[in-house]
Image 1 (tube, rainbow, N blue to C red):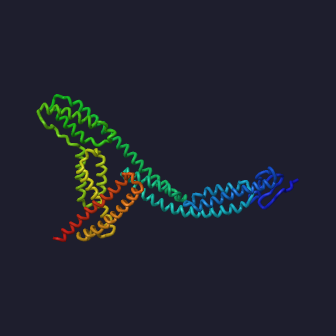
Image 2 (cartoon, rainbow, N blue to C red):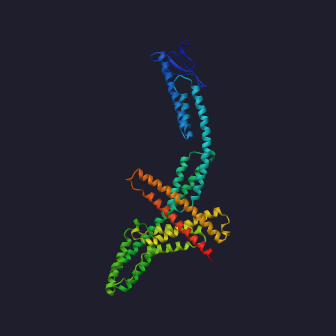
Image 3 (cartoon, rainbow, N blue to C red):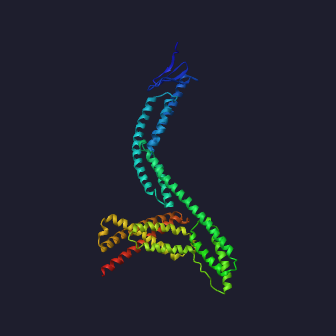
Length: 431
């Protein structure tokens, strides 16, 4: 015989000292507890528990309203729904679940919109990655790929039907870094072979330095010096003391040679091969300034910069005049290349115009570029001054100083080119 119901309302009831939640939305009645002290106390306890569930739904609404990425709360909502269905409390669950249903519909609409926007952003990032895929500017491109990867992760998911874009992006990024790894492995192998060659030349020089057959040995040392120049650059960490040891062996022998021959000068004048390499690079850079194909000249100038860096002259012994000549030539090439890109984008038939018109266009565009660069420099310097006012004891960051100097150098180069165009125009008009 069924026990008499001790308490009942629309949400639950107590029977046989057991607390039951009435079924809802197709779920059956279920026991949620037992009467411990009294029916009234037990009913109050489970009603209070329902208020806790209500608060969780309220909190979720507040989080979604305040969030920028609202779609990220969908999984939290789904977990909360399951939590409510299994929760032990007395109250209006259908009302709470209805609130969650409406919020879920809003979130899914937002997700559809966001994923469409995410797809547009990721397609743009994919295009940037594709443009960088074949780059051999390992350092700069590595940083750009890291930035792209960070933006990609931050952007969020796309619809499943477009998920192949993820693998496409990963393939490009991984492909670049695989090529970079292979390049440096090959470069390290080349360096190891060069170090081995340098060490062999040092051994030969050390063997010859005490020779008494002076004339024959002097010729051999000269050949060793020529061979040394042709070996190629290696990282300082790998080179060790090979150059110092080689030079010392040369000096020991030729000091004896000079004394034996009664000479006050050096028998063989040794020219620093690194300086010779820099002179060659500088000459090529200055010749590129006369090139009719400024785009090709710009690409070659980038390669020359890398080659200059690879020569590895210690800054203490750098020929500053030579360095300035090289840098100035490269800067002019880059600025001319940028100028011509802007000019031809604004003037489709530039190449067909008379020389006077071409010079006037160059002068106009270059003047505008200088004006914009100076405005940018003034803004940046103002920001730096503001930072220094806030903390006068703090020294200016090296990167800030470097950026300012680069901007000033760009303006200086542009002004040199502008004056050159004006002089050419004046010369034509004076004929």
